[in-house]
Amino acid sequence: MQITPKLTVIVGGMFSGKSTELQRQGKRHMLQGHNVYYVKPRTDNRYSKDEIVTHEGTKVDCISIESDGSIIQFMPFNTDVVLIDEVQFFSDRLLGQIEVLLRSGIRVYCSGLDMDFEGRPYGITPYLMALADEVNKLHAVCDKCGNDAYVTPRKVDNKEQLLVGSSEYYPLCRSCFYEKERQTC
Image 1 (spheres, rainbow, N blue to C red):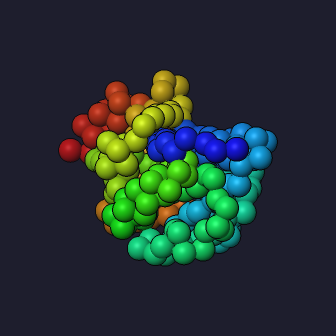
Image 2: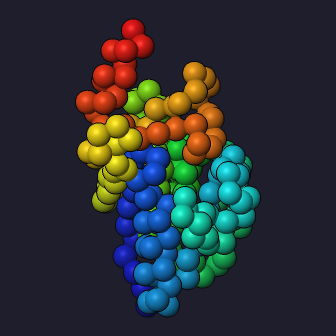
């Protein structure tokens, strides 16, 4: 069955359910007989090096690629749907590869952080959002007040852009994030 090429980007902070939603989309397509191909960056090795794993422990097998590598190189010939997790860690080379996939009639789903720990646009995600046919923004629950979280700051004082791991972060709504900023000034 031929499907229409489409780029869907799933974004939000940590703990918002991005990987869960990516897996849901893959399962939905598999139930329709589509051939799916899961990809993640090699830098994401928190739970597994060859699986996409949600915080709840749900797993799907995937191919791990270097951040500037080719996602197409290992893709099976008959792929209908490509699902890419932790897209913010990939280089801008991925943008051209996604364009090739779409032109080839393949549907693409990308999930990743839209902002870094300081609330700034993160990696290639803003570019993908601009190119997308559809953007789904998911929200975690604020650790302080229970409202929808806006950003995921760090618990530790480390300004390095790449700090992989979920225990170093916590979700905050906009008001609680601004309050945290005022307290650190």
